[in-house]
Amino acid sequence: MSWVGLALLAVAGFLLGGVVTAWRSSRALAVVLGIGTALASAGGVAWLL
Image 1 (spheres, one colour):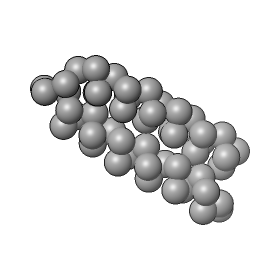
Image 2 (cartoon, rainbow, N blue to C red; image 1 turned 90 degrees about the vertical axis):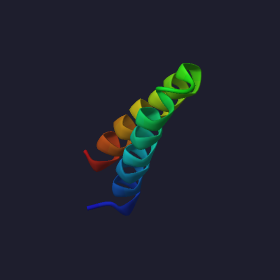
Image 3 (tube, helix red, strand yellow; image 1 turned 120 degrees about the horizontal axis):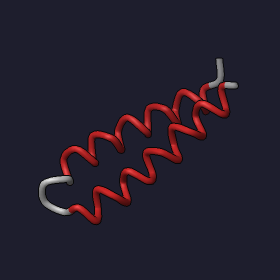
Image 4 (cartoon, rainbow, N blue to C red; image 1 turned 180 degrees about the horizontal axis):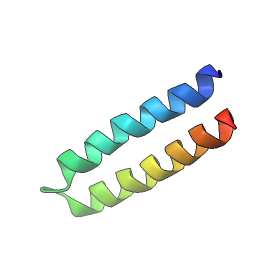
């Protein structure tokens, strides 16, 4: 088990919370955070494989 992969998945979870919070007030920020979430989760999964 790699710490980097787990850290990337944790960051993705943190960013996902930001997406949910920002969605009501700033859609553009939510989209940017969503892209970051997708990249962090894909990187975390790829690192663990």
